[in-house]
Every structure is written in C-alpha cells, then in structure tokens.
Amino acid sequence: MIAALGMYDRPELRGPTDLYWSLIRDGLRKRGIEAPEALTRDDRAWWAGWHSPGLLLSQTCGMPYRTELKEVVTLVGTPDFGVEGCPPGYYRSVLVARGDDPRAELADFADAAFAFNEARSQSGWAAAANHMTALGLTIRPALETGGHAASARAVAEGRADWASLDAVTWRLLLRWEPDLAARLRVIGQTAPTPGLPYVTARGTDPAPLAAAVAEAIVTLPPDDRAALGLCGLIQIPSADYLAVPIPPPPALAQG
Image 1 (cartoon, rainbow, N blue to C red):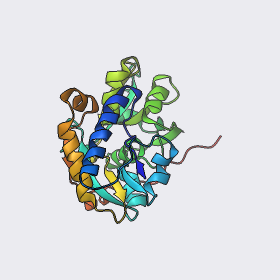
Image 2: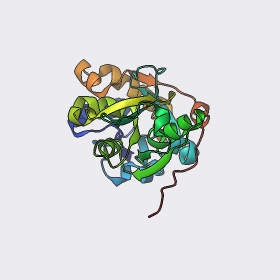
Image 3: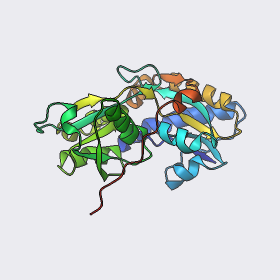
Image 4: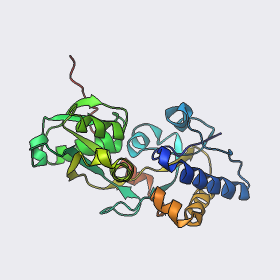
C-alpha cells in the first residue's frame, strides 16, 4: 500500500509532513480504512506508485493527470496552498531570471536558454510554454534539471537564462533557501491552473479519503499548517484539469 506526499516534502518540513500524514492515517483508520504507518519516500512514490493498484493516497501534477493518469487514478481533492492571485486550489508558475540579467521584459527572453525540471511537468514546462505561446513568443528549452530547485540553481549559476518554478516551491525557496532566491528576480507569472491534486487508485472510493484529509488539515496545529502552507481541500472537477492545453514536448538542441 502506497501513501506519498512528496511534492513539497523538503527536509525542513519532514516533521510537519509526517504529522500531517499521521492525522490522515488515523482518520482513515477511524473510518475503517487500512492505512500504512508511514509515508512512502522512495521511487515507488512517483510514476510506479501512481500506476499501482495499491495506491492509497498520493499527490500528482496536473499535466501527468491529463496526459497519462486520468484513466488510472481517481481524484480525491486538491490541497489549497493559498497562492496569491489564484482561486482556492489553483496555483501558477513564477518565471525567474538572474537578478543581474539586464533584460527587462519577458519578450527579451524569447529564444533565451530555458531550464525546466522535466517534460511532464505542468508548472516547470507546460505553464511556461503555454504562456509564451499565448503571448506570441518562442521558448527555447535548453536544460532539463530534474527539479524546480535545480532549475533555480541553474539560472543563478548561469547555466540557463530563465526558468519556470511552481509558485509554492518558489515560496519555499524564499523561506528555506534565501541566498539562492536572492540571486533571482521574477520576470513574469503564468495564468492560474488547477493545483497538484491528491489521487487514489482507480476504483477506490475517494469520499472517506477526502474527509480524512480535510479533517487533518483543520486538526494540524497552526504552526505546522502554516509551515506546510495548507489552507484546505478543494474539489476541482476532472474536466478543469483536462481543459488545460498540452504543449508539444520540449525539444532539446543536440550537440
């Protein structure tokens, strides 16, 4: 059985995250649902976990949901992280460049070297690609980094010119890696899209899971809830996720 809450599971937040899971776990057991004692924090938590019939609860990304997982998982609900300028349960991407880069406008970064975490990321790739297309601008993917913080470092270190970061991750970088964040500046923000949903295996009743999660968020001590940035659990229809455009995959230059 797999339970994973790894999207924003920084080392500094392990304590609050584990407490959050323990409240969810106990709420599920109270409702007669078997739940693992601890979270899964290994390779099973990601793609293999999302496809596993043993998936109890995990958090995925909007783009994988609409491109690959919509027939594999069931939506439980979307945690609301209170992202400024977004409806409850929604988020956006923050577009960043080096603080000392002389280019002033986002249009100046068309065809500049773009760093992205991975091709199947909504906030790291799709949001930026769709945003640039809507503005009539081009985007030149130049470096796949494997993670949002790694994309931020690539820009700060001059290995790329700009990147698109999940707004919640950017908030965490401002809090936990201020030296890195201070080397960057925001050059734009994308339109809000549905946030990273909690999912369970196809065929599992999501109602008791949603109830346990919502109860856990309310029960968390205020300091832990604030550390995790949790404001509540929102029910966003599957159709809203599927309505977000799917851009072409990033094509990295060879050689």
